[in-house]
Length: 262
Image (cartoon, rainbow, N blue to C red; front, side):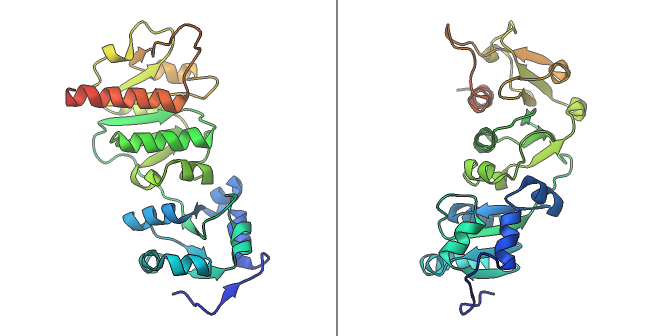
């Protein structure tokens, strides 16, 4: 429950320090917790009933979001009022909108149902790219997303913001390698400019996982060797490559176009 009379006014308060610790990837991994910053992400957490360890908010935010506060109370173990400057120190965003939370990392077991459509990302490093891929994959009705453990953290604050809340709706799993994907009853599709087949000429109606590579280096040879099919995304003369998030979107929506017959 929120105690309206107690307001944290010092950036040295243990609550504020705990939030700041989670700015660091090593602390997020060590504690198995992460940050949610901003009203929209908290709305999405409430929409799926995602449990929260701790919530911090300003008095002004409380006055403007009474309905959301009511939804947060049964989900949060601890809710604290803080001054705006303390909240600023607790968040990674430049101008926090008045609320932030700590949540436990989620762990997903191997798929318990057949995969129809999925994405596997190798060594993706840019949090904005990963967040956009997650958002797009959720919109394209993907069943699951995998990424290698040497990728950017899936719960990096910038990743979470870039997903626009869709992070909560797409099961995501980090793997040391993608060899286990070869045991799934799916076709594994990789893109490469040297492929002879255009992506729209491959039948994407069967269960499919798209293998997508690092922003600069693309897919490694071992991952490329896992692919059952290789396709290319044709580009105009003088254009070297597409952003990985754009490439993923093109492939996912081609799969949906084929499956829905449009």
